[in-house]
Image 1 (cartoon, rainbow over the protein chains, first blue to last red):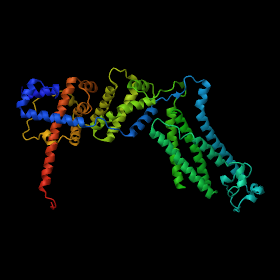
Image 2: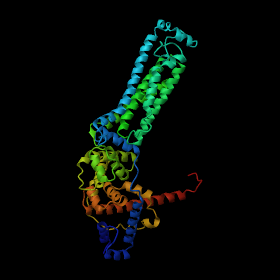
Image 3: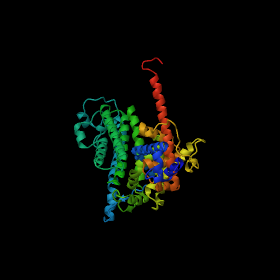
Image 4: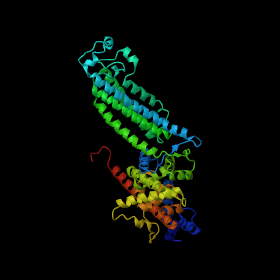
Length: 256
Length: 242
């Protein structure tokens, strides 16, 4: 056998189990010995290379979003095979109803508050509430804007912090909204919101951001009750939180 | 309240994105049988994925993603392109999964798509002198091992380490590179490679041998280059002003 023939054998049969003629040639040919040794070294080194490499998580997130956008992913509603149609319907509606009710309460609270502001902007109306004024700590009477915490169903909005007796009678619209949203949020921590932990973490982070912003607005309004812009931000944040909770519950419904 | 304005815009935008994702995910609300838990077999996952089941898609992705990414990474040499190619390969796979009938192994089908995606990308980037097609044709000349007098013996010098090898793999022509990575790195057999590459088993063996001999040449050049640099460094004594 010649070198050329040996290489043909290597090409067609590989490196393992060489025929007898090839082994005899190798015994006498240094060049072919070197070639075979080098090729075996290369193969050994190649085997030590990792056959698998972990891809970044963002690839799946992006891929999943694309699959959803193209409608290739279809999420069926989880329904018990033996449940009655009514149980199924109410089971589907429950988280939506709760979230929708929370959003509705916020909208109602905002509407009530805006209406009261419009009534309270007339100074003559405020003077007709002497009972409230006697309990109110000394405040400037020139300001016409009101604090959300100073309103109540029984009293016209007035300046300064709400008297404690008036407060006990009924919660303010912002307190109602805050309470409603807090109740809606109670179910969220135990829910798996999405099949992917990245999306789940992102939803929860958005909620934390909103809560921090709401707390900041509420604190600011306590210190500056006349700040209309802060009040507007606060109620917008309530609305956003209601929307976010509704979206989280919709997403979690398919996962829980 | 400037920060509040920023948060306002941020959370509003985030809420819109969340709505878009959740809205697409909930889809139709007709009563259906509940989705089974994560499937235990690939065949089950394929069947569910053909029905649009999201966990099944993710199962298949997790099952094959690492190998596909490794293949893409070795073929193109940089993570950014590898990520794009991997996503494109899986996107094509999931778009066409409804047509999979099981005539070949699912991984073979996936790798075929991946190789096609990669070679298409490389073909678009290749220079006119860097032909891809010629690497798929058997070479008529076969003149035996090159007798380089004084060429270093890789086995003795221990130069075939992972770093050198990875660097030289990147220099291989795409056709050689594909066969070498599939066979020697990822462990596919020639009949599977033939199925993936759309060539014969004999062609796969031929390409593999050529890839290995080409790598040998590249590694020898690599060693010579390193030896030259070492000699150059040795000629410059430490502390000299040169």
